[in-house]
Image (cartoon, rainbow, N blue to C red; front, side):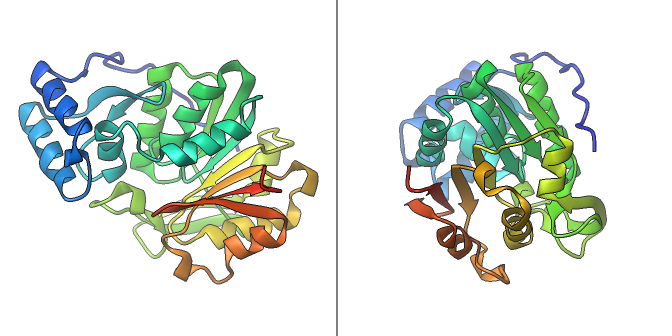
Length: 273
């Protein structure tokens, strides 16, 4: 499988920067409770009323063209500069010396582009996103950064090779998932994709695939060399009840230590370091 091609960004990044009114509202929201919870849709609605369409902004050193409708992740990135900060801090500590970061369920690039900006020439990012809308936005954000250290793959990963049915969620792009839907996407084991991409060792991994994590991680840890396993893993645990086998228990049995548990994510590191 070859990585997706990245086209030049049109209009160029910065052309859709916040207007003066949007900037004023963003400043107010970011310094207050308005960036959270039930207030977030109200603020994003006001931003869209001031000027429709996406907004070009920066998050953790990377540029993003952010859409406010139907994508709570993008709204959170725009309104909350500290979004998922504890997870990023542990990942960056693991990757301080460089390395390879793998983002399974990359969505629009929240982790992929932020980590790519942190790594620079010291590392490489493999971003995996099969959902067509999210994949296209991810490529746009790669173009916005002219990021040469990231490869994007339009496929699902799991426990088999072939095709799989996929559900697109209009209300929340990040909730799109493997399941009986109107889309069909390719699927292959994560270890196979990484081997095809020339990856020999994974230094850190993030996975968020809406309850399909066990189908990805169990075969990965069964087949990937133990000495090349990621030193840090960020895993979304909200859909833990969907797992047929528990991914966190698996990693604990392999010597990982739970370092952080937030509302959505658990972070584990090998040996606790």
